[in-house]
Image 1 (spheres, rainbow, N blue to C red):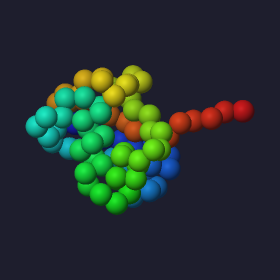
Image 2: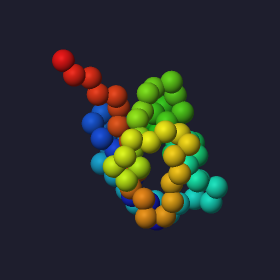
Image 3: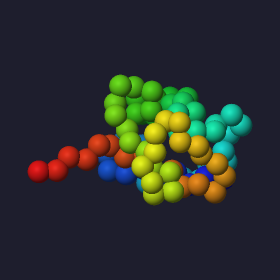
Length: 84
């Protein structure tokens, strides 16, 4: 089981701040997790399979698509943040 967290506009668009997910077979990294979530369709597909930039963190550390994901991990997704 992994814990997924959605921040800022992602939370609003998906209608949830997070969920627990049994790690699907074959999902071993952030890229595979994105593909799995995109497979839900609707806004999930727009966010995770579109051209939109969505950043990820695994266990509160910035992550790349090849960052491993395993049972017990916390994965957060969030839009890029700008400052001024």
